[in-house]
Length: 122
Image 1: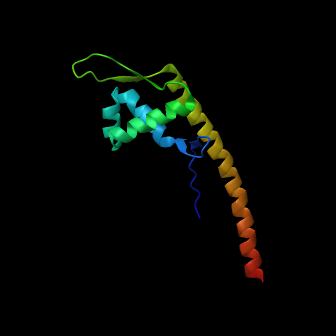
Image 2: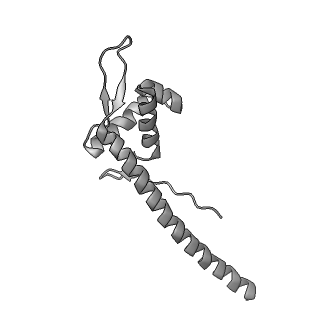
Image 3: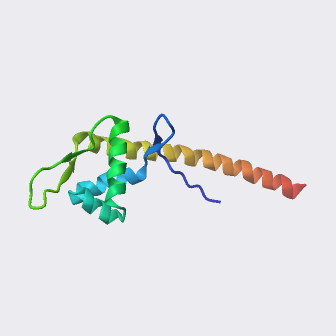
């Protein structure tokens, strides 16, 4: 038996707007300096990545990226300072939450093992 935990945030309507995919997208934007390149590197469409970013910004109520103007192809994007802080807080939260779930999973495993022993012993 194995435990898999997915953590994501939802809006007031229960619609998912933030999960590990958005964090990966933000981290890739930081590396690539472009939403289009970040999306390509993650093998998701530009439209999907744009939608993920927009939905996250709307629900968090602060900008995650700042668009650069100029350059030869007029393309460029950087993370805001708040986005960088958010990423750090998200990773910290996720790690703490998964540790707590792991502890509960160990207790659950002991309870299940106890049930199995009872069945064997009749």
